[in-house]
Image (tube, rainbow, N blue to C red; front, side, top):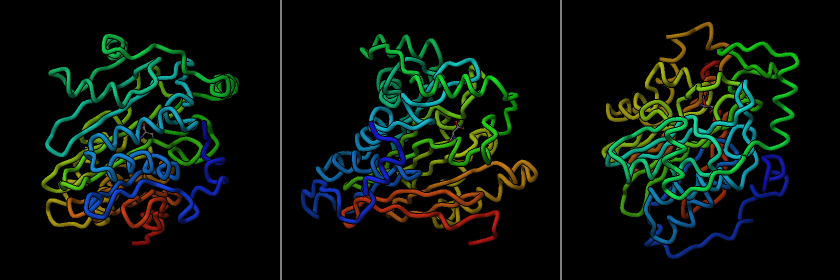
Length: 332
Ligand code: ASP
């Protein structure tokens, strides 16, 4: 188990520290994986094991998301996530291949690997999204074990919150910072391209802390938190999911790339759209986009400072980039 701080302190970001498989430049070729936030470094490494061995982008993003769901201990991803206002830890995840196949689960409880359930939805059902009890029932039928996931730390944090906080959906119930900032964000959004040029993406999250029971964020909504199209590229998001849903944001980023924008330009324009829709709310909410085009170009843009993302390919296995491209400060 690793929390973010320990992970960083362990020096995992130091160049060359990680010994990752290097099967040969030919297989690794154009393969690349990018992920949101600092823990994206660890998730990328799990995905790179698949990509560097010649595996598919789809298998890679599932492996990366699984790493975040079980190995990371973070208040907004996977088993260590903070619960909703009723003390229930519910998880959202999605997976999408560049040929249009996709699956997701929302408000899933007591299952360790929502991203793998999402993949089963994609592969074993005629549907795209399963939610709540139905998603859990399907998971159990598929052989996933039911287990209690809420950690004592998350339960304690929830009890603390109960003492003082008023629920207000558009702002951070923790009152510790900007909604969507490091105290209340951290969806893993991951995008990959494999040696054959196929794209895939995955998202996994416990969503916004102290959300209303039953709230679904952007991460399991195809086109909001994740969209992938082999013809163009892929996009994912982190931050306050309601803004992504309102703007069909990941789809928007991909469509802007289709019209000729670079990944960074497309992300910036999507952020501008978010701001135009809700200028006042945009002053206090964080929204971040990450995109990868079919040529392997990466771009990102965030509404406010603080968004970092991780890039991994045959030349760099543990790179962390600060998204200096921040809309609120006018930086391009
Ligand atoms: N986008 C996620 C949600 O709204 C949370 C996050 O990325 O911080 O559920």
